[in-house]
Length: 208
Image (cartoon, rainbow, N blue to C red; front, side, top):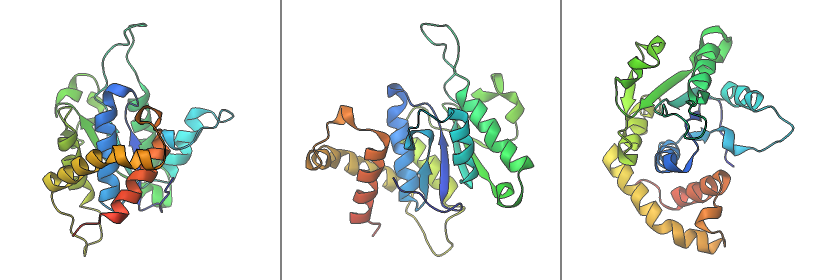
């Protein structure tokens, strides 16, 4: 599992369920293809650690954060919404506001399905530059690429979001063969497997 420096790390705060997986996987790809390192709660499993403590630790190590607040649906069984994403966004913003030193350098991107939809359920973040992905992985990649380009080294120019989305499509086409090489079934693929395979593919297929 790759881990970068504070200025490379991007905390990813989004749903982890299967229905969101196409957007999640695309975001992780875009972060690494931009030369940054994705970090999230899935990277480490420790039953002895309280989940929120793990979140605190990861956020403290990340200058950047990508927060998708699009999951507002009620749980089919309990009839309640999920509040993890707004909570973790609040922790990130709190670290920036009240933290010392490098924590005040934090920057974040907030995503939703529609750009202004959040005003109906999370109005306290009005003023943030919300980007929409419309449940489209290609649009999510473009949003991440365009945002991270503001923080990339000035001598590094990444091609546009459309080309990055095309590269992602090529990676997905080649993923089944890559999984066969390591004898892992697609349904068995966990986050650390995915990032290891993806980072290896990017190393072999650099921009150019």
